[in-house]
Length: 607
Image (cartoon, rainbow, N blue to C red; front, side):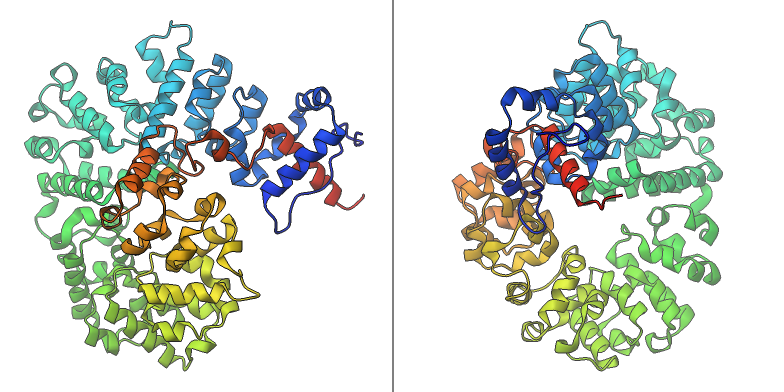
């Protein structure tokens, strides 16, 4: 039976609230009854008209189906977004024909941030597969490989990157200055730039060469930066480099690259930038003007130069200073001191100044914080977004805001809860239990994105609100989507609930929630079998304190997930391929598109 459009007329079975696995099960049963295999396969070959809507399918369904396709046709590759293409298994990529490989390569190069977001081992495997695919005839030169890969080159494994880059760095260095360099590649890049056959010793570098190297210079080790000649480093050039770096970090690729850094790497990056500043004349005299600082990387200037800024410039740039994530706690305290010198004591600070403080606000003493007016919602919203408060300060924030607005815990609606943000953890667990469940569940999608500093008792009280009848119900019935919505709050589930989680539910546990689970509870809750269902991004976030309490079998399960090179950051649950793709059954992606398209057509009103 066929529809008017010539596609197979399938029943409209996609769920409103149900699971996609139920849909696939029903569709698989329907096809066995109604459609001979040969006819179904013929129809699949003519499904190209539906490829345009593929990217509107549920994300997990797409990833699962991609895991099943061993030879994706070029038409499908052209329609998939780079975000989805980055999830194609490296083994499949290595077997693609060169035409398909170039389609994949061009798409990934157009939005390389999705490659930067992949786990390291998966990234290495994908790029190695691309090189193998492109060079299937064995005729590509080193230069051709580098040109073809373009800004994906730094994502190669170290040895491969060195082979491709070492002989042509001198001629083509201008082409690679805007690339993302993960830590392992940055170190190799530094070696290549300092090699005698490249640009001679860094002590002999001239200003013209520095301009060629551009933002690659701050990627060099601190010791190398200290050896550079001061005559080659002008103040104007340093300001330009910091400005370019700031703009690059705001680009999609730069943002993904920066977020992939760990705390040590971020600190190291800041130290290299400060070293470069010290080599120029910028560290002498007064601090930067606000228009220069606003277009630069604030933390690179260091606290001494920021404190040396003119009062007007400092206050004009207060919001930019308060938003910098890399300024240390001790430096924040000094900068807040300058604010109080200029604007007066905490009780006299205007709402406009308070809203601009950002991270600086976390350095108020407890007595100072009690003097701050917390009635204004905009002020509380800014304070609630900061995560560096102490436990006592969280209590002062929550109590001050609720007292100033004459509202009790049971009267807090979703807007109040979102405004409190991190300060929600300043409420006693008993008060949390009095919050209206419907209001909290409306706000939990936002609150669940925060690394809440709540106690175990507080988080548990919050989860009980969502398990009530009429809300999300019993945890045993929670779907993957519910766990994703709960976010970090799911860390408050008790050990019995966590130990009963099945594959689909574990897939919904966010890495943030995993990291916030109390170590003892983590060890007694998750069996080795459950840990093998973790994704790479869940396994990598497990804390040292959590690992210390795991037994040998549990640790081996975690190591298995982390070492499996094919691990996907978003969708990879267990070692078994059948388990990993339990949502897909034996169906191809084209069939899923057919379901979606037919159901959508049936739901549209007649013209």
